[in-house]
Image 1 (cartoon, rainbow, N blue to C red):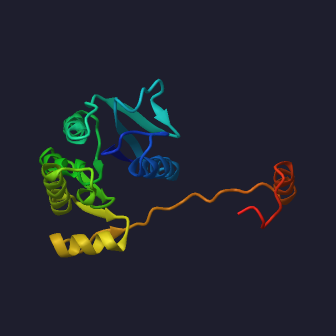
Image 2: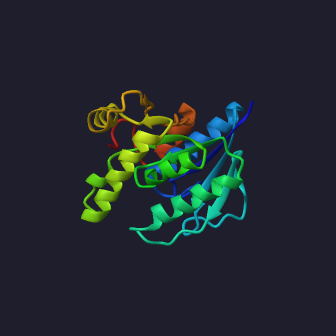
Image 3: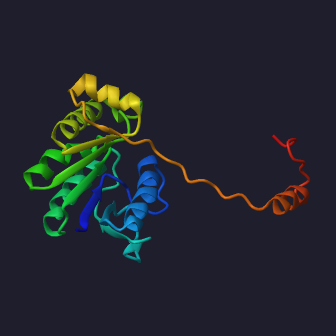
Length: 202
């Protein structure tokens, strides 16, 4: 049976700046290639102008969001949550603690929810007191109400154990793609062309 997964909490893919965005750009095409899931990423309209509706097998949908640091994520996530009523998804994968505020809403809408905690955004200097409180609330609700929780480090795993009593999160580290180097003779030619010698240019 193929699972239909809707993704929210990212600005969009491909080639949108951000850690969550890079994570999603690498993760979902790989899931699609494994053949067990159909994936649709709901992106924020200020960051994408989709002339195509897929990326490496992943469906792409652009949904309006205000370009506002304070309100963009929560408004977009709320609209995206309601849009899942009509998209046939079995699972909604929510990324980051800000969008985590909509996890209880998604559960009320009858969705199975996977939440990935990428880090305590409320510790960042750029947020004011009210925003930090909302981010903390997003973390609390997401960790409490999601069917499954993924964390990207043991530090975050320990944080949610101690703060929220969630002891069954899945620790899945961010991976990196292995870069394929050119053959040795091509490497030598590139260095020579630029007047560099191996081991002496750093």
